[in-house]
Image 1 (cartoon, rainbow, N blue to C red):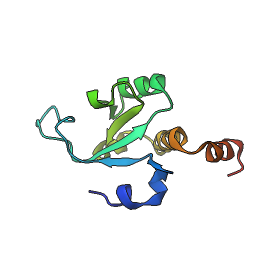
Image 2: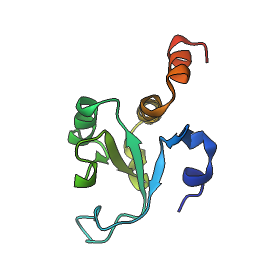
Image 3: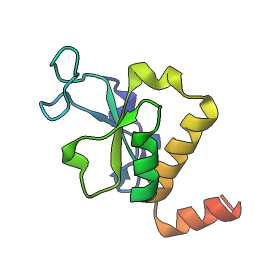
Image 4: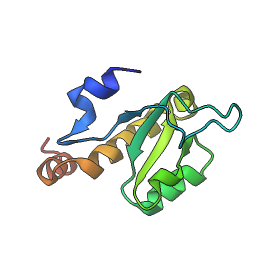
Length: 113
């Protein structure tokens, strides 16, 4: 498990994590091997529309029934090379904005951060 995803305060928008490693679990199985994914990262979309666009697109993002009804979605670390650095920056920033305290969000969005 990548410890930086668990222990680094930079991956938290107090008090919630906006970029989390997901332990292998039977709710997220590799279709080819039938084994639980061991390299999943959980992110949060700004809303259900953005989530749908991400998981229905051609990229590496997907969802599972565990995330039905909320804005969480998944990506395999091993597939991050399929997106650009700018796209990665955007989904991480959106995830942070979704969970960050209002004061921090406002400061970031107005350039006062």
